[in-house]
Image 1 (cartoon, rainbow, N blue to C red):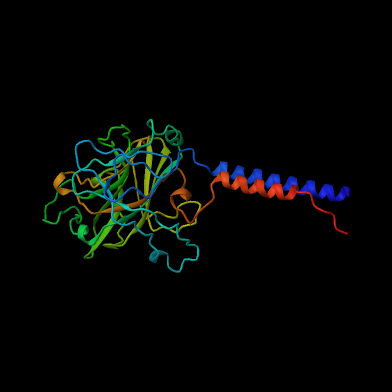
Image 2: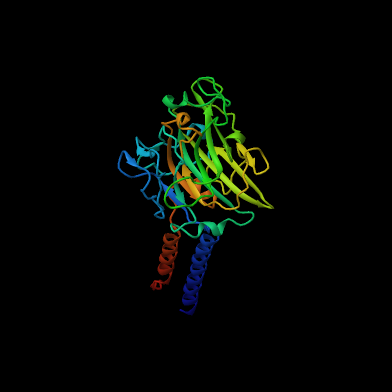
Length: 336
């Protein structure tokens, strides 16, 4: 009888240790910064400014003097062709809701303040050797790709400093009433590809220093974009871009494009204060409308912005562990 009791206690202790370890791992992997997710579930043709994200309740703020971006159309789907034959690829959860269609008017960007009254924890994550990420689904329809620049030249053959279209960026502005999101940091840009009916994606601090991934993406083909900002210390900051990266990894693979604060068009900002979506191309007449964005995720971990499926929240994992502990502690009838 004593042996059975000791065995039961031993199993209970082991289960408790596993439960604590599981919750400890969750804490160790948890982000200091809040995780933000928005699949844009508002009603069709709703102005983005004023809506709240699906997770954390972060509010989008619209520019005060220009046309807003609108939640409209159908939700985008994660691409699978780039992952064909990759056994580690596990498609993210089904996309819910609609998408954001960027306007064809000059806009400083609908933005989410990250260090304002909406949230005070994001800034605490941005010390030396830390990273912040965002990811999104991007689609440039055939009707929009023809309006993009090609190597700094617009469709009419004109060239100027505003040679590409900004889609999304971190920024150092965090005001709550719209307006300029501040210096563009880790910005995602699009331009026409080298083949007809295609576009390319690049990353940079501003338009004059964009580093492009040379891959041509067919117009109308959604691409999964991941961007990273990292503080390397000593006033050096790096931004990296991935297109359709392999999912299920603990850290990012080799990026498709990288820029840093020492390059032309770089940035020297030690603080990320906002995230914005924009069709801004420098001048109202040059903004490109119709570009779609969906499934925006912002966080301090690669694993958060590259989802591979529905993962139980830490609280749920803890309850599961406690449930298993309860089963082990349940009185058992001794059998002969």
